[in-house]
Picture (tube, one colour):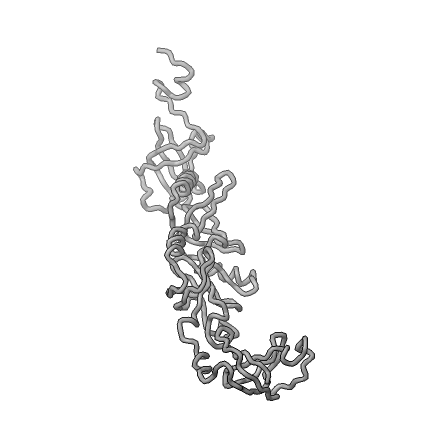
Length: 351
């Protein structure tokens, strides 16, 4: 019986098995030591997996004589006539394939962070390096620092090393060796749901996700909002970090919604004490008080304890506060034109 050349190349009828670099091959472990693994492949051919290409499998207790493994062929025949294979590359091939599936099916996967740099975090996915950019972190894990200090940002990112993150795969480039993952995308549906149900006036419980000079950020149900310095307390707070730390549990009121940007308030959860302080005042009432200061807005006086009155510059016939001839502590008299609750002051007219 004769064989065509095609039959010989693919091994048809002749019992010949051809091995090609890059293909996968299954074999049975026939010997194993600390430096290599020997396999019996199809056709009775012997394959070898070196320590380098075994990766961490040499210490895997499940890998024993008689076990069937699948590896990637590196060299169909070396100088000793052995087929050289790689478990590490086979594992990576499977990982790349799985990553593409995860991205296509928009599935969420958990990864562990092992490194941090100024641009973001590095995670491990089955032996492959995946990059989680800072911009793709959720509010609770975003490194907010005063002045965008790069050293402080890196310090905060390093706090995530060893943590497990739920992420979505958003870009896979095997040729370029790049994998981009997103924590934010993994929580996208929750964010959309929260924003859809949220209304101005709602009171929610959250966690402080950032403390800056101009206020604090609070995260809840996958979204985040800002409590501006002026909305922290009815009194004056000069330094939010003296009162709040990241991770603090707080209750806030939603006072503004602009797309996914939320404005929040803590002070509005309590009554404004200033209202009680001005209960004894009414429009048309004459008041007097000592001058506290003056600026482009006008002249401020102390009408009562923690109650200030404001005269306009026009009442004093000047175009600029620099033209005023006043002294701090000097007493002025006026009539209340209005009680400005929002600005916490009495609007006065000189008499």
